[in-house]
Image (cartoon, rainbow, N blue to C red; front, top):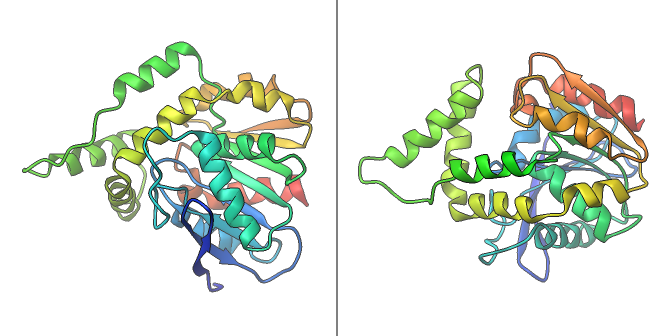
Length: 261
């Protein structure tokens, strides 16, 4: 197993924490995580791809060890902060893998910075209907500390319900990351709801591979997203859910390698 090095990149908005694994040269593969995780969710994937790609996993502002964004931030703000971090790391162009919120940020970045992203693989691309958005909004609850610690158990139960096969250590990690993110998690969801994702996706000319786990919470978005592509493909991965990067990183690595190389 290779050493994943960690560090900080300075941007006009604050410091972005990153993980980097570089055994080979070439165009970097940038990994953008879901809410409310961090770049840690990609460590297994980074090791699987180490012989083929120089990988960089960024913590989105408000998550992991990156700076806290202001209230009412947008996906464009997140994208600009991460793109600035990549430029400060010497990245002139890249490939991108985005998962859930990371997909939204990837599309925004490709829209705002033409020619910066060469190809993308999007897992759980959030093409959401008004009914889906309203349902998700209704499920979001304001963050508040509880004397009995129920704020921890509520997140634990939500993650276990999302994927009952997830190892307890991973559930524990994600609960702590969600608690660390606090209001930023709700802010990220709202930012995605407000993004013109479908319009941006349909305007992109670059090659795009869409994937979804069979039991992913955003599984229903796969075909609608595919119909918007000018240059792309889609793939359904059986028996996987929203935590596919933890439960089956090999399947994700295989898709990325086959599509980009």
